Image (cartoon, rainbow, N blue to C red; front, side, top):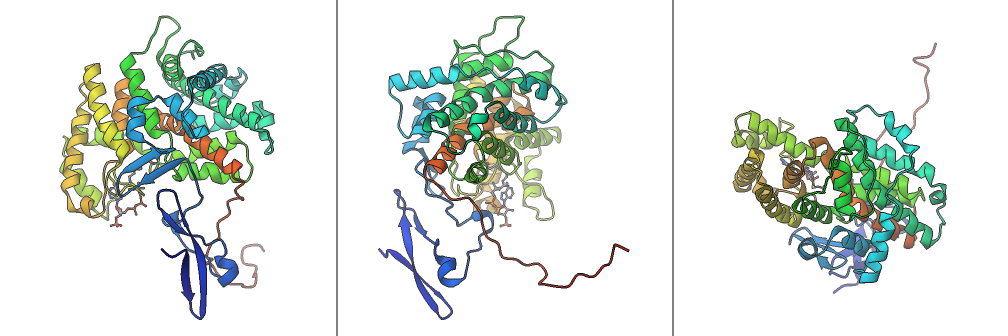
Length: 428
Ligand code: CMC
């Protein structure tokens, strides 16, 4: 196989190196392209651009493969837990028992959030969107840990920053939920594991004993694993981009939260349930909404359908669909919205429009139904995605730092006016 890509541009001919990843993915290394030819590449949406080399997550969108550090997502979802997966993503290997205990202890000890942050938090209206609150609170944390602003901090300090962010995020998310329902916040309980503690802070009440149902703990743990990383998606690329300017980890993660909020990315999970509710209220006429999604004059899209890289099936969606049936059965819940989701999937998957465009249900299609069964309000769904994606953001931020990546600074092709002389029109 050729080791170089031969490129002919008019009279110029150049050879560029080809780089092959460990799974055989091939790329043309264009680092020298502009120097050698004066050309840059144009790739809006980065559909054909490998922004980095990464050893964290591998996915093959055609075959529906997703692996964290080589381990198939199906095995991790079935046999591991969110904390072990977090360790794996961050440090590259599964932890030994000793490492696991040290890691989870470390996180447990940092779950308290500085009381002064409540003063910022109290300023939010109770109906403020949870993602806006989370984004601001994450950035606010940086004011309380000024050492983390040093881009040249030691490996231990990096670990401490990562620990603090992982530990405090569930506490912040629980505050946001408590505020939305007008209940007093709950303090973390160090005797609980990560997910149990989170559910305790969200659903526990000061007035009564509370212990989350193990079915719910398992279901949420699985969902967090499935969201934990997804290589260079929009929010992760944002975290790496912001981090590449040597902005601190809190600011970089806050930027990731902002990017995730959009309805085309993590915000889709909230939109899916809202869409299913609309269809239900409209008499469950699934075919009507499939037609609307196909109509180019209608801006309606089937939320939870389609993916930039998965063009066959989303392996996460497959696991979630099964888990969804399981959890609802075990909790004895019948949600009519699940019936509508299944009908919608069936109709869309038989329709040529969706078949030709390779549009399948994605991770967000069924996850909201589980979140709802657990008791989360719809507006909290994207925050739960953020909680799951956090280890991915932090691992990618860490990798970006360790590999000494240059500041991210794409070029553009300018299409505005060419030089012209200023003429005073408005100011007299
Ligand atoms: N409903 C109807 N048509 C769609 C949909 C949809 N959900 N998704 C894509 N299409 C059509 C689109 O109109 C276009 O048609 P045409 O070629 O005739 O112009 C074609 O399929 C290709 O779509 P695209 O927007 O160019 O594809 P993309 O790779 O830029 O976008 C996407 C991917 C996920 C943003 C898009 O499929 C979408 O908007 N889906 C709905 C939102 C959603 O569920 N987002 C969550 C993604 S998974 C969670 C995550 O990782 O963020």
